[in-house]
Length: 362
Ligand SMILES: Cc1cc2nc3c(=O)[nH]c(=O)nc-3n(C[C@H](O)[C@H](O)[C@H](O)COP(=O)(O)O)c2cc1C
Image (cartoon, rainbow, N blue to C red; front, side, top):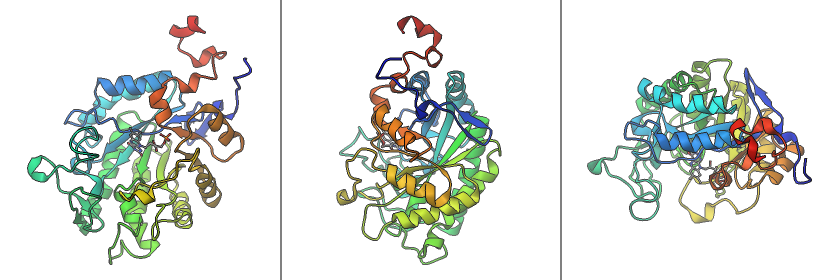
């Protein structure tokens, strides 16, 4: 083993329920906006996720998948609300699993952050698409828009019940598709985060006001998904540690939410922060491992396993976070877009980590 290599904690397995994740460097969910209008994965997804699975990450978290057509962000989002879509996902899950990585999927309802163009089309970032132009009606806790996106309708009791049902159906489809883990997206300003944060939730019924009320919908969703997804398979939740904004969610509120999630029986918190609004002042700071400390706080508060995400850009930082016991795994995003083989970079003396087809290169 060369001096730049080490077999540290990042290459030890993590067992959650009946699933063994072979190492602790994982791929963060990143929307590709490359699905057909039927929401099915395309060749792009197979190559993109397949390359990262070959590249040695322990778990591939397939990007945010809409739980229903009206819950999409764009018309190019992946979807997991019907059996045809589940069948199409099987190519992804079987290839990822064949390479020894754990196939995982993130489930999303966009709320007021829905019905926009893909980021590289239209004017500026995420231009709205009106119903007249082929978009769809948005629901949210309150009728306040996200930036210049369409104004959402305040969700009725029936809308709220439908959100819960849609997540349950998606979790069932994810199981059918061969995913070993589902992650509920409760961060980055999508509908569950909108309900949680007083900056987006101005309701006066039992879903708004106190933290107990603001947690009601996210906890209903998480409880229902946990019941619908097989007991041997883990459920993760992506949570926000802070809104980075006055009057928004604080780490103390996030800790209370984390304890409730532990009581529901979820298996791991994926810890991120920010992006509730377009307010530039509320942007997370540019800082290595920006959410690592928060993840550790939530781990201590809840007793749950945690995986921070955000500006963990190389294996030495990942190894340090794990060696210090601050987290149980790390999620990497953009670094893996730049380099699909990143997780193998310190494993050139470990042929078992590499495909046999590549052994002559070692
Ligand atoms: C192209 C792109 C798409 C993303 N899509 C998602 C997504 O589908 N779901 C999600 O929770 N976060 C998404 N994110 C955020 C990442 O998962 C991650 O939290 C963020 O990039 C910070 O981690 P990093 O510094 O390692 O890139 C996306 C980020 C990028 C760059």
